[in-house]
Amino acid sequence: MDEKHEAPGISERSETAHGAWDERYSEAGLVWGRDANAFVVDQLEGLSPRRVLDLGCGQGRNALWLASQGHDVTGLDLSPVAIDQAKEMARASGLEVSFSALDLATDWRPSADAFDLVVLSYLQLPESARKPIHAKAVETLAPGGMIFLIAHHPDNLDQGVGGPPYPEVMFDEAELAEDFAELNIERNEKVLRPVDQAGATKNAIDIVFVGVKLV
Ligand SMILES: C[S@@+](CC[C@H](N)C(=O)[O-])C[C@H]1O[C@@H](n2cnc3c(N)ncnc32)[C@H](O)[C@@H]1O
Image (cartoon, rainbow, N blue to C red; front, top):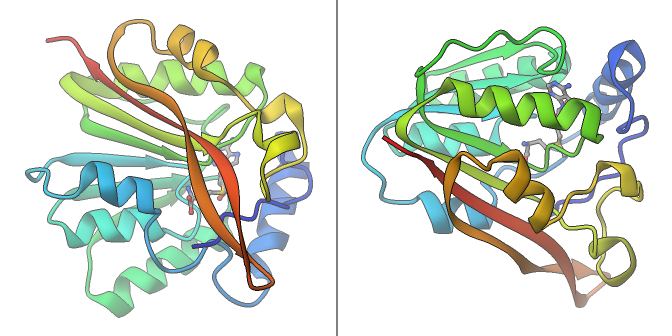
């Protein structure tokens, strides 16, 4: 699994970030690989079917895996190029996923109680965009529903490998506890992700968060 994160303009929003992500996804191949993230699989395998929302779904690796597990999945991402690729992969795999392109910070108006699980996988944004998106993720979650988040931890900047080199898009355990204060926090911790680099295995440092909305 490769979580390299070198897209230019990641710390920006609007047209610049939009164009940068489209450019990144226009390169040949699957930028984040075909397989779902290992922490997504470890945490979410075996859940009973539910309404799932994947925020910043990219080319859809996690959304497609979740659909293959029987969930009713919606994937949203800024990049129309990535969304087209995700739709094509869904078609080729015979899976049904509702994929749409939109800016979660500026254009997403979530319905309340619409999802039982919201997944955020390496959606690294500056605080001014992150906080409203995290608040909207909680708003759209039904009572008893779960937020699952995996991201690059700030410690990755100087102690890990890969990931964005921008401190302003990283967030730690304390910031997640604040963003998701109204959830019952079940997991909020650093985890190591082995990455193969030129034949040597090195560790990337991620953060995993699981929170459940009170009934
Ligand atoms: C590092 S990629 C991760 C993709 C996917 N979640 C995965 O793990 O394979 C981050 C994704 O966030 C999307 N993104 C960044 N800012 C966004 C925004 N404001 N609204 C929606 N998507 C955004 C990018 O287009 C990109 O696909």
